[in-house]
Image (cartoon, rainbow, N blue to C red; front, side, top):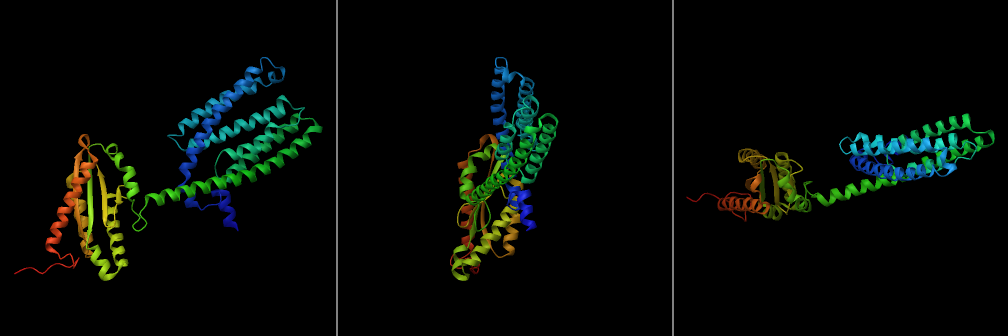
Length: 359
């Protein structure tokens, strides 16, 4: 029970790891929302500020409108800075919430204390539905502004209106907390599901490497990811068919998983792909041929320790001459030459067993 409450309060009903995986998505959406609402709010407040020069009912609120416009500009600036400093995305949303709540409090307790408060009550329901954050922080935010409103209402409102407004603030605050939590939970769960589907679409289920879809999507971005040169390593597993036939597909899968893990250790998760049944491609940004050869030497040593065999080819091009298609074709051609040399020494039907030497 306590764990469930904790997950709802801190992670919107998902586990901590899932929440952390979509945290950047939440920050990005909050930043965009804060920017959009700062622009919309600035436009609306500007209109009301303009009307205040012609309408007596708006004139008393001129200071509030002026402060609101300044705050909207500040929110936009902070939300823009959040592109570089993620913590500012939270500053921008709570500043936006503060502007809306203070606006509602000011209208209800300072400029129109004799009237029943409406704007602040609407804000209590509306603000929790806009932004996404940990529900506990949202509850604390609402509680704080409800307290401020009650203090100001007690100071400025007549007795006949005070009890109604205080009761409404508490009721609408609770409704805002409940509805906000429901909406935040739905949004976070949607982000988590979207993230999982995205990972599944780009991940090879057997080896955990990036799959061919991911390979195709990222292919053209590699020339922009390196400063001096780009290397392509093409790897093919020898003897997979024979191993599947003689020892079963489980053993074949074990071999593919082991080789995948070793390739990933040498070239990293981001740049390593399984593009076919027994084919892997790895990219090596800004590595020279010597560095790649050293990594392949380590890779081959580890693979041979397990009595597996791979055929390898690689090619390196300088950044100003990169042609992705040519780079991959040349690496693949060298791999096939290596594979041909391997099978000159090994019987394809015996797969991993070496042919006896001819005397």
